Image 1 (cartoon, rainbow, N blue to C red):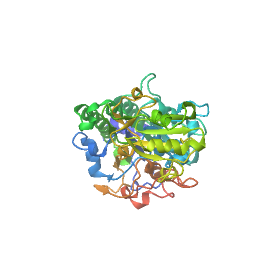
Image 2: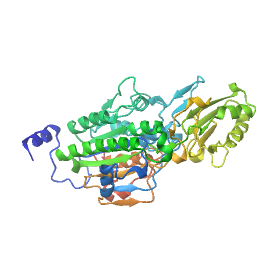
Image 3: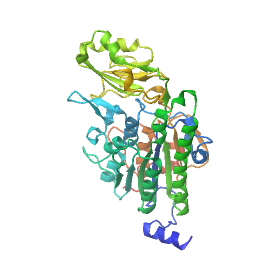
Image 4: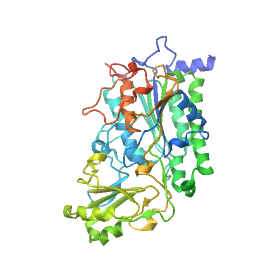
Length: 431
């Protein structure tokens, strides 16, 4: 070890411990969650050699799925709370607020389950350094302080006036925090360039375009940058890394849109009797007269390009999807693969790449790192692993937090770890 590396370790309070085999009250543990927005499982390959290498050294969940609707806010909320929308309150990207106007679901006041940051801040007996560095303002807003939720120690605000913060800038901020703050640590980083590029890429219907490959390679390079720096400072042995996508992508041709508004009006409902809140390939319909719900739902079901339509009484129902919440529309529709919603008119959503439906539900879920609590070696898991929702339960167990009242809806990712690593008696927060 060089003098420079020794001094860095000394300043960070991170000199190696002689007893460092498991997570039992491990004061050095680094737990990082990196979300690559819109990444599809089949895209982890030659264009992403770092992720492919992590897959060869860790646990890869072959059938992980996003929570429905398979959108960004819904799945980041599921990731940070470990429960379905019915319990955490985030049922879509937008909803119809009490004043009758559509509103983004980007406020901590709407969160009805504690996030990992809140639990670490309020329940952990040891101090855990936390960071949340997020790709775009709605995510930043959702996880800031408010509504009883705590904010991470480092909660980086994206540049004002931009839709998404560039991946390289987000990683710079994340690495600067991770490498120069004391342990134990929990950090969440979302990389959004892939979803941004995918939404405007018209070549998506024909396969992976060169432009998308370049964006994926760039995201992979950001993760390689972090790992190389962790290894250079001998921190990789302390690291447990989750890599997940919030959703996949579904692409449609320019004419592959569905407008619910004209069809519902054609069934006899007046414009002031309902409101459509559409987000890509998912849409919620708020019907103001309960007696008219089934009429509107029947009209929606007849539309070409609509895959699944849910109500409280349908089969499957809103409850079957975990969407039985007061802020959910009385009707939730998911577009069929290759279609998107555009309401009230075709010009509202010209983007070929969308998420929200079952076609965008398969997600990447990978657990790797250098920590001795990991099983190590290529582990391919065909069962278990509920996508982003499994992460909160697993991270909480790693830190030694007890299950919250009602438990988690997500399952523990036990396949990735030594059995002794996932108990409430271990970790920095254990009694």
